[in-house]
Image (cartoon, rainbow, N blue to C red; front, side, top):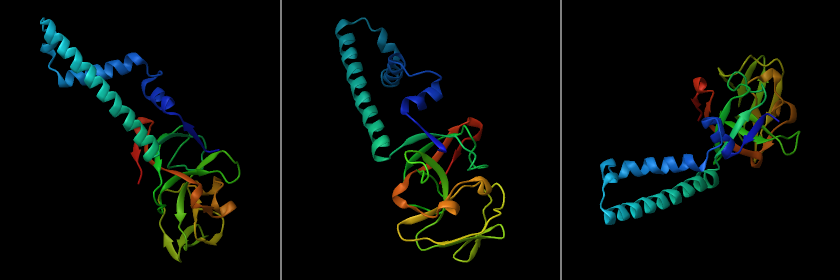
Length: 217
């Protein structure tokens, strides 16, 4: 296992330092209300007007609640947003142990994308690697260099040049994935290409630690 799937509440906990409470959500809704209704109106003594404002507030709160629920459903359902934490060194120096990131659903595998996929050696676990080869590609590693379709590929993100040799023609419906820490990574150089269907998500943003915030494409 190289990644740890964080539940939404764990993600919020990592930001706020504690579990989000109903009080916090109420404050958020109240602040949103203040953005719509000028503060001075809240001091109005007219009973009818106050009742009307209370009705508006409750209506806005309900609308915001529905929008919030739909947004969560959209991002976690349609977009397949997930939160992970790195627990291995196989992607050094790009990703370090303890890094936390947001991953989204993969629409189409792309060379260079960092992805979370099912671990071929440990069912039920996930690993994180970089897509190097797509179906039909000839992938070779020799003399410390990566060759794709016999063309040398510059890889400024790797920790050090690989010391092994590797060659494979990527079959249809499969991809080749490698760790950036080439000499200390269990990847396609060990167990070969993996089915595209085993790719769970693509890393979009590293949000923790803040000083290493990064957006990935």
